[in-house]
Amino acid sequence: MPTPNTYDFKNFRELLKRANSLFHQTSINNLSSILSQGIIYSPATQWGVSPISSTARYTPNPQRLKNLNRIASRGFVDYVFCSFENGIQRKNKTYGVVGIEIQANILLDRESFIYPFNFIFGWDGASLPNRFSDLSTWNAVITNRKLSPYNEVLVRRKIILSTYLVKFHCFEGISKRVLPILDKYGYNAEKLQVYPNITAFGSGHMEIERLAIIEGVEYKALLSADGKLASIYNIVSSDDLDFLGQFAVKGNELIEVYPMTNEQKVVGKLKSEPATKLA
Image (cartoon, rainbow, N blue to C red; front, side, top):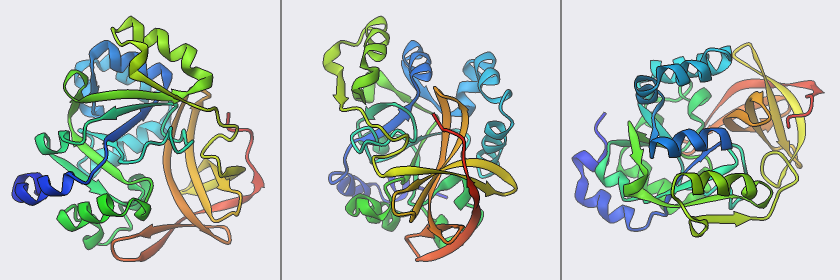
């Protein structure tokens, strides 16, 4: 489908004047890879640029490879996933422990889509109106950030840091690991904003660990203290994991909520027994 910056550029440009920066969160290990290239690549483009490293990232973990295939089947394997939310500032490391802040004006230059729901597991249950990424969807997300803190902003192919970088963000506890990486690739300490450490794995509100079953696969779930929200992860290692979405919880059911139409779908269930330690 066409995006607003191709069919309604004037109104899209005015709308973006109210937008914050974009944020791409990643792991410390992946930060080195990104800075060595100076570019955040989509999975498809990265595979073409460096097939050996991409193979090493995806093939050892069957679930990571399955999720990549799921994104590919929906036509979005050549997009970089970002958000308007600074997860590090919100004390949330679901997407990674380092945030890369990008100028929002990249959305005027590159094809992009936005979805205010969990993309990995929410797409199949989304009705056609929820799959639209038209100006009304962009307006809803930009003017009402509370619509979904995990909005998915998909930027086509690559983000060149020398053109669009604002700065980096991380927690205090890992700044001593991040700073040498930045220095190695020519970025000084002024490019890094540091935040207080967090004690919980997810956001400051996430405390209860459980197991979840989605599409027959077992994942780790982290529940909010009130039990109303669950963040789902594919854990590869303590330094390498994939955040797969946040869902509402009703009983033991995981519920996908589609803000644009107020529809709800059951995507999985929580198991009664606790999970092993996430990190």
